[in-house]
Length: 121
Image (cartoon, rainbow, N blue to C red; front, side, top):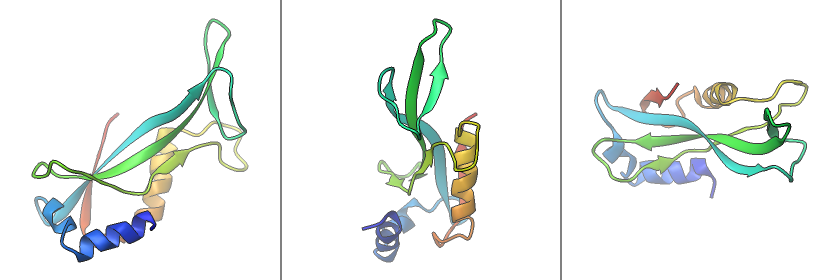
């Protein structure tokens, strides 16, 4: 099943309704995380950090949108947006750009509720 199919199942079966908060909105927390890091292994899609001591760390990351509610102990993961070098771009990708891509893909309210986005700096 895809993330969207799982989400639609949760919505159809009333699970998502338990997460509705305030003005009939859902709260979506967006945060970046790294899920791979190495000083030796890399690929063409890796981002990297050059350190003062001359070493390089290669890493992969993603933005993880999650439906949260102060009334629920559980959360609902939505489809992540990967932070990786984009075709035709010389600069590395970043969390802000990945959030913008995720918003562009999801701005048409395919989730059925208005959403308040929560983020960090």
